[in-house]
Image 1 (tube, rainbow, N blue to C red):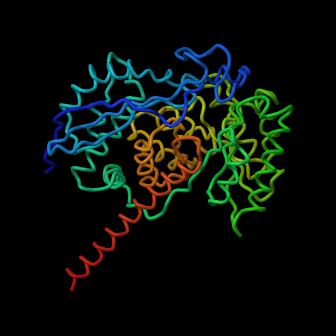
Image 2 (tube, one colour):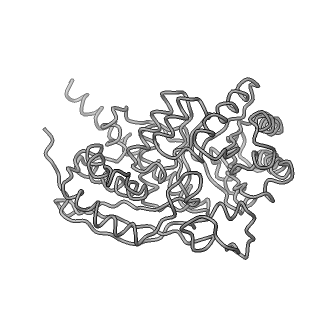
Length: 426
């Protein structure tokens, strides 16, 4: 019988995310660069400037033995775009947490992660809590459950979702930011599994009829052969932020034709195209992406499309997976909300034969990233984002090292259990 474990106190700590919040609408409309900032008037509600420093709010749960476990709340880089929650406003999130969430935490039994999430993160005034709050609080609740069980976060997930303990790492996907060529070299030299993202978020980067983008794709493939280790053969994954639709046309057949041509440019490589078009609503996205998937599958290409925009929550992921409206879904963790829902989303994708990409944002923190690693490894996602930040090295280090530590712990426990069982049987 499980003995309930309670929270003695709750503390909050204001902090920084690892990158910036960017107004996607203003950037797509052609906002000019001035050094690192953008010039012009923001177009998305909540943005004071087109590029704003990312903020975070840490929540610390003081447990009965005075141990304090933490989670971090924040939004994603392109907040307010594609049906996402508005840009993170730290004062409002702080006040809402104090008034609504903290009283619920005092009543929660943190020995059960899923149960605690269900009670603490339930609707308020018939609405979901801000997803940033769900994300940060659920991280802290997972760490509380792991502390009570004296286990890793991954072991809690495996226990509560009836999953076998993992034995393999999850392929890591790195994103280049605007320093594309330099960061591609870093990724190749570090033999990253999936690369480079590319940040193809403007007409200049995509080019007339997509020629600039196609040339970049060919260069990345060529570069992997020039400087990569013998036998190195990564998946090439590019986020085009809807620019295929914007430049080539919003017809599924035209989009599929363009993607197939890009795949033909790099024979032998598996190609991922994230967000080929934004059709303006979840319903339209479902319908048109399903057509693109079908057209590409009929061609038998190595090209795969990845849904991001308009696929935010667990319910969205389930709808896209059931409809086969993507080959892979980005499970963008701060947009999904509770990290219990990220675990569920991976399992939903697996059930329907759709790739599960545990993503997130460059705006996250080291703390949220380490929780994400445990979710991705426990559920054996198909790949996960190297985060936080846009520096490449830092994200690869944080994600890769956390995976290595986690799997080493699990292997150690397996070996100890094997020795113990051998002694008992003897």
